[in-house]
Amino acid sequence: MKSRRKGAYAEAGVNISAAGRTKDLIKELVRPTFRPEVITDIGLFGSFFQLQQYKDPVLVSSADGVGTKLKIAVLMDKHDTVGIDLVNHCVNDILCCGASPLFMLDYIAAGKLMPHKVASIVSGLAQACKEVGCALIGGETAEMPGMYKASDYDLVGFIVGVVEKGRIIKGDNIVEGDMVLGLPSSGLHTNGYSLVRKTFGIDRDALQLKMVYPELGRTLGEELLQPHRCYFRELQPVLEKIKGLAHITGGGFVGNIPRILPQGVSVEIDRTSWHVPALFDLIQKQGCIKDDEMYCVFNMGIGMVVICGQLEAGQIMDAVPEARQIGKVVKTNGSERVIIK
Picture 1 (cartoon, rainbow, N blue to C red):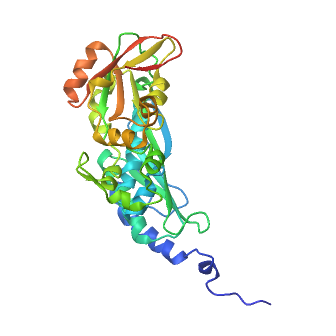
Picture 2 (picture 1 turned 60 degrees about the vertical axis):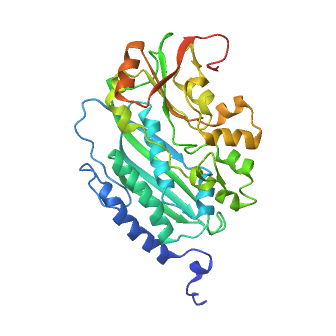
Picture 3 (picture 1 turned 135 degrees about the vertical axis):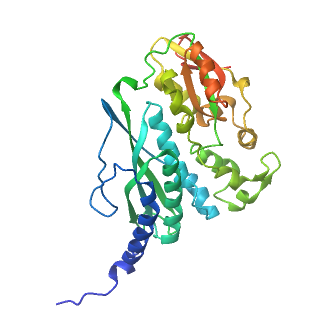
């Protein structure tokens, strides 16, 4: 009979004790995000959330990741903002349906689990969840040597929110003459990083991240790690005045606004109606990228698009001072759903 080799799993690259320490740290970070509806602690095989105080509730779910922005975080060894990115991205997505966040789960996979790094990631998740009243109810950590390099990891989130059935925002009542408003982004948010890394040669030379550009006023790396902005607190009080919301993520204006437009209408966007942040101009010049592609890849300084009636537009702009008119809804002219002028 062969004797068992002590530590064989560790020799294969998986450290069970490190995973245990990681989970203990996570528990302390996420408990402050719990709402009264959470009726279990972290550690069971499932997480319980008891839905309360809704008349005709509809659950709204979404899943997303941080993408290759994580490469920037790894190269800069700064991990406390990517969790903020993830939560805010997911909250914004379900907000487009009129939903408020209830709870969230995360998935962290790494080549080597380092408890302090995971704790830094989860600290950002917990901070962002607390700011919007979302319970970080559970998740999973996985050590996967061979799938990821030791320093690399992936971060994914799964969110569940709720909206009363009669208050769902679908965009089906958008008509010609409606106003298009824009809310400013805080930078790239979580999209376009593969193009940015290629444009600046970051994968070949990580020192590019330490370059200070006068137009940015700080290093490129600091600018690229600016957290994804959340619009929930600003827009929640005026949701009843809104016909459609488009979160400008991967695909930019052209890929996201048509998702909420009914047949027969398009949107005209006036690109001169807001100031495009310096980062986008820098990327375009550095990469010799055409205007059309910029608006198909990046948010160009507008992170959320709001469509509403003409009367409601003024009321929304009064309630949300940073909102500004950036376009209008027009009758469809050909196959273009978003016309950028």
